[in-house]
Amino acid sequence: MHSWPASEVPTLPGQGFPLRIHDSATGEVREVVPQGGTARLYVCGITPYDATHLGHAATYNAFDLVQRVWKDAGHEVLYVQNVTDVDDPLLERAVATGQDWTALAERETALFREDMTALRILPPAHYIGAVESIPWIVPLVKKLLASGAAYELDGDIYFSVDAEPRFGEVSGLSREAMAGIFAERGGDPERPGKKHPLDALLWLAARPGEPAWDTELGHGRPGWHIECVAIALKYLGMSFDIQGGGSDLSFPHHEMGASHAQAATGDHPYARAYVHAGMVALDGHKMSKSRGNLVFVSALRREGVDPAAIRLALLAHHYRSDWEWQQADLDAALERLARWRAAVSRPDGPAAEELLARIRTAMADDLDAPAALAAVDAWAARQAETGGEDTGAPGLVSRAVDALLGVAL
Ligand code: 5CA
Ligand code: ZN
Image 1 (cartoon, helix red, strand yellow):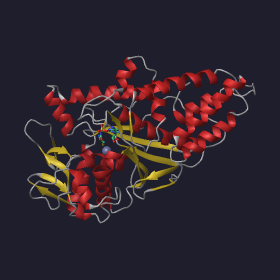
Image 2: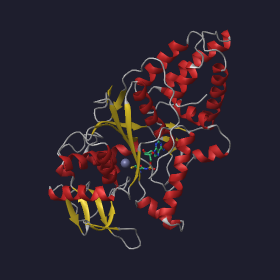
Image 3: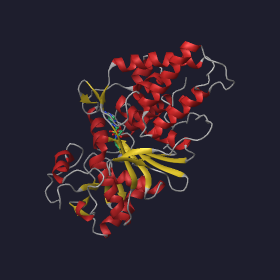
Image 4: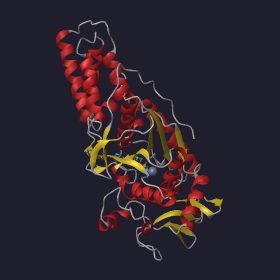
């Protein structure tokens, strides 16, 4: 499916630093230096049954920063994202609201693109739906069946977690901890006949009233994890640099994805780093479509809120922290935006180059956006005092804030 338009990324003098980022698999912040110039990034996309909320926006903002740091360090970025345009929650919402599931998915995906464009989130080069990826899913599942890593149960096909000795390396969870959250996150540990309670669905035989496709695996539809694996392997191949998403995807989704891919290819690792953004909450609970405690990006935009302020509100929290959205976040961001805009309307002054270095240092250090914001704040305060001294290189700060933080001043 089509992606969304890219906002231009201004070029900056000199070069940024290599990205150091937290990898869930090792639990460490370490350098992830793309091999061969092109950085390869896969970020899990939305399940389009509801509009983009601020939790989604925070997660996509985090991985947008990854792209910006890599570009600034001189890398090309090959970025791929999926749309889970057929899955249980989408089908359930369509039935509950009397809508056609394809129309629902198309409408919400279109709204997501608009929100991403407004927030200046750089688009993926390949934006791929689950339905589109069925032709690549089928041979992958066949391969897993042939090698004994998958098995059939009443027409459905499961991945056998015992087939991949490294199962558990992404999330680092114990089997007990996994058992506790598997069911909450789409798993079916209780189903009789499974070889292991944690085995995950690769293929679902057609259920009455649900969409299904005729394939060599029978009449049915794909499971969730294999969708992302098929898309990532098609466009990025094994050992791509970063598999990204919110922390709720660490297990089972990214754990299963790594195991599916490693079992299917015999190669390791699936991704060189697994990076997870924190959860944004509202009223004491993680914002979630199922709970309905949501603030929509599109609703804020309709109220006339400048998307640059929404983005600044997100940037004020470190991408790995869990935090709760408050109106005060937006008020502070609007005030900061006004302050920065006033500051860049004057000549940059001699401290602009130093500020660029400080933003670069902060962002390359596990995407420390709050530190970058503090550096710009300090510079803006000095501007307000000195009135800005004309050093003949205007616009560096606004270009740096745009290129590295995605905020247009
Ligand atoms: N389609 C799957 C991934 S393949 C999915 O998880 N879709 S989603 O619409 O539920 O979430 C899309 C992305 O937003 C995921 O990376 C998810 O981790 C992230 N996300 C969901 N809720 C929140 C939240 N409250 N805070 C931060 N990120 C969130
Ligand atoms: Zn995914």
